[in-house]
Length: 206
Image 1 (spheres, rainbow, N blue to C red):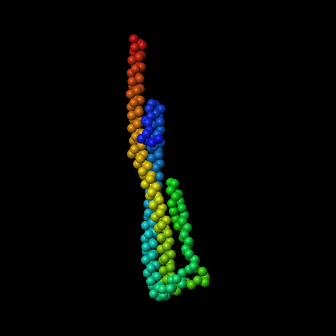
Image 2: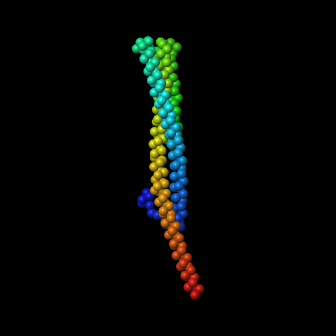
Image 3: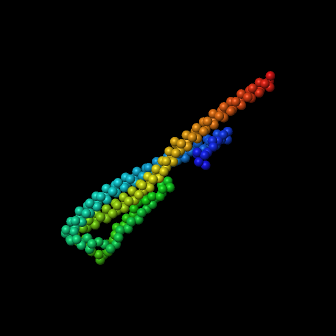
């Protein structure tokens, strides 16, 4: 039943039910706020890791391009292709779950292996370029993982924040108001009942 269509409880049983509902709503809000703090902490860590990976990626990429130009000048335009290994790098993404949110957590990177019969880079500049490109690719993979994790955690944080706001600003105040009104009504009813009993006792004693 939606809150708008909900009928306010009455009587002592209604008061008990309202107290239980209020306690449940408050516990729910507390748990959601704890969840939100954990999500925000992990999101912050993921953002920091993404920024660090982005810096490394940009630095290593610039370094690799500088070495590549030198290597091509020394060995010719086809030198990088002749020295490239046939093997490919392998990337495995490890996943984690936080408060129900599945997100990428880390990258396992395996460099390509050059076969014994395959040629090595013909000059030092291309060897440095190869090393820098591999580092740049590792950083790019980490950037993708941490950036995606941060976005997923941020989306769940936004949903959780909305739920907390709905409880704190709307549902809990409504329950408190209903409980206060019901307690006042019960107090007045009990007072009237006590007056009637005294009046009845007075008449009976007279």
